Image 1: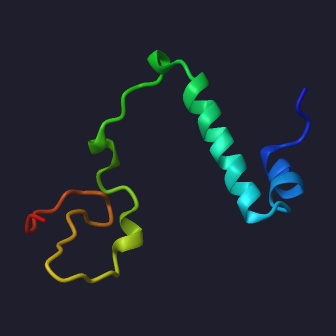
Image 2: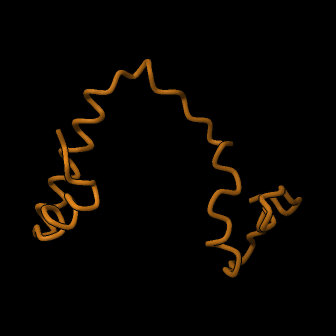
Length: 82
């Protein structure tokens, strides 16, 4: 039975590794998850589920020819097409 939390495992075993070894570990974990997960049990993602997600990160960023299409409440706003 696993007694260490994910945070403890990270701090005690992963963080002390060299960067290249941490990247190898990530690759092994992703590979394992990808090839051992029953794909039929995973729901299909819908790109529109991500609409307005993370909008607070971009709120103060001004880019030329870009309009923000979400207000801070996640409400869609009309604007120029990208």
